[in-house]
Length: 254
Image 1 (cartoon, rainbow, N blue to C red):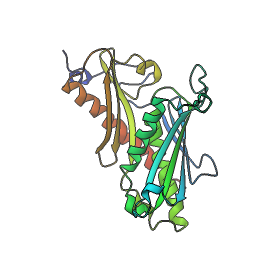
Image 2: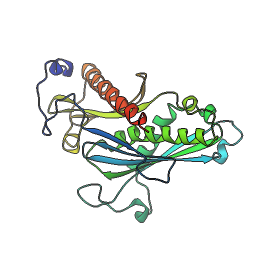
Image 3: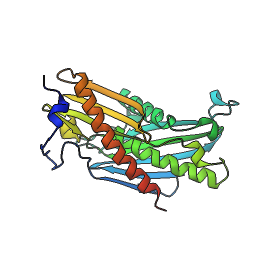
Image 4: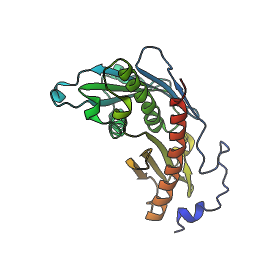
């Protein structure tokens, strides 16, 4: 089997949307998207659009009381017509789906990975990620946007004397991106048309310092080898660095 790393060298494949295999979709991060939450962000990755809000609350859940530690949690949902066909709201169905639970936990884990809970104190931040339009990569876009919303919420908390320093609470940045193998070719940042036929599909969350928080990878049609995995991780690292630059550029604007 030809290693994907070898296939990537000198790669000239042009994708359906005109991108190179190692190119992100256009990324746009809009802060203060809505007025009420302590942090509110619209993140756009190509045609995928997610609204991420961060709510700061003094106090922690009962099980966390008297620990001196804070808590960060997340919820994920999709609007009924975020996709080509309408789906019922899970609240109407009366049951939260397994995929929704999985993604909510993923977002929460990624954010907690860059938060100093002791510096946060006995305060809680609740993140809500609502997909307005889905075209692949909704969970990774949610993580990328949620981080910016979290930083804004921490800045609000510092300004209102709930915490001593936002910079002490946020230890590092975090972003996430998808990678995959489509028709034997490694690609970065998959839209739905590529994701739906991927031979390997992977989501990678990384910190600004280059460490991994989450790697989710699945072979759909054939197994992948170590060389292929390494190449996909290299692509993800490149994409995450670019996403983190976009995060910092957005946070520098006030």
